[in-house]
Amino acid sequence: MKKFLSMSILFLLFFVLPINVGAEKSKWKSNDYDFSVVRNVVIVETETNEPNINSYISDAFSQNKVEAALRQAFEKRKIKVFTSADVTSGNGPISNVYLTITTKINSLGKWSEPKEAYYETRTVYKRITVENSNGKTTTITVPSEETIYHPARTVWHAVVNLEFTVSSANGQKVYMVVDNRDRPEETDTSGMLGRICNDLADDISRK
Image (tube, rainbow, N blue to C red):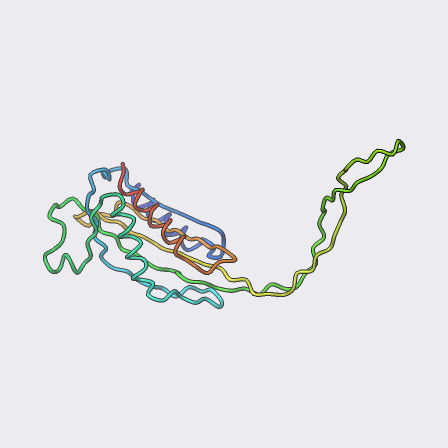
């Protein structure tokens, strides 16, 4: 019952998480599975969803990028990576101690938002030289206000929202995570994708 409630809460959080924020993460991890013994993982399938984000543009070859990032993250931790094709052809893990990873790509790409022109008033500090009554000069710092005009422009965001479901060799779910990241003023998703996959590899390669 406890496991069911934990997984239900995770899925509920997924549906209420805002997409366009800096970072949101929800995860559940089984207390009954020894993750430290895992030396093999199998990437079994990847599902791609179309997010409800205005002006969203998906990265080309999103599934390949996710698989490559997962492979790099796990191999860096000395964990062998297999695919469902490897298992079908008889080249899967020899040991029956492995985890399978199912991935949902809820977003992997970029989106844009218009920014209206605006004025910004801010305090700046300037150094000036003054002369005292004895004729000596000294340098002091004085505050002053200046107004800066920012023209209208388009701001791009790199966005990655991935959902991983991890199961043991007998099909029991042992780990679930939704990792959602958004970085304004950037269009390259590779950094966020790498960090998400590294976090996953860290979480399921240790107790």
